[in-house]
Image (tube, rainbow, N blue to C red):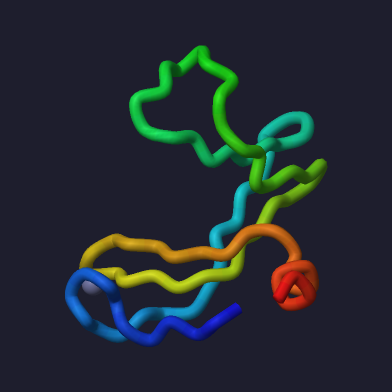
Length: 81
Ligand SMILES: [Zn+2]
């Protein structure tokens, strides 16, 4: 993943980390959904799935509460060029 050092909103320093999602019971799906899509719609792209945990590497600005994260396998991203 390309290193993002500056927040796109305030220009401040970004912290490296990850988004972690833990299921309470059963597997977990993470979806990217376009705006103005109803709660019951199944539109969107599944960007994460796991039986025990889903993680996305990324960077956050704690001041603006913005998170920039990558999804999918990094090996696939680098070989697609
Ligand atoms: Zn910021």
